[in-house]
Image 1: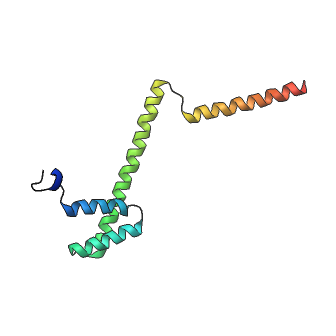
Image 2: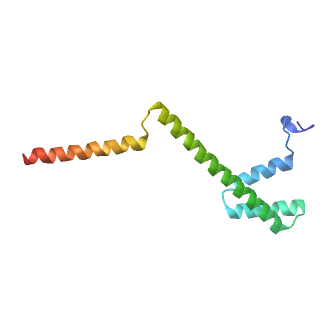
Image 3: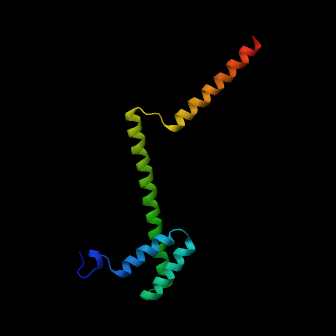
Length: 112
């Protein structure tokens, strides 16, 4: 742990502010550019270089989030399959098929 960091945090105030701002900026490209401009001014780095770095970071985070989401879905599907539990889409499909059969049966009964 970093010595003198508040609440035992190993991150400094600038890093904490950067991480918080990056989270908010991830919502829009304009927000990311605004964050990059502010950081470039504070740190004294070229604005375009900071914008590129922020965009690269956000792109990497989004990619990792997408990859994690796909992996999580695969794990859940595997567990559900091993447990033998029907998924909602399967139940909905069966409910539709039953409704169609009931409708056909009513038509046949009416014609007889």
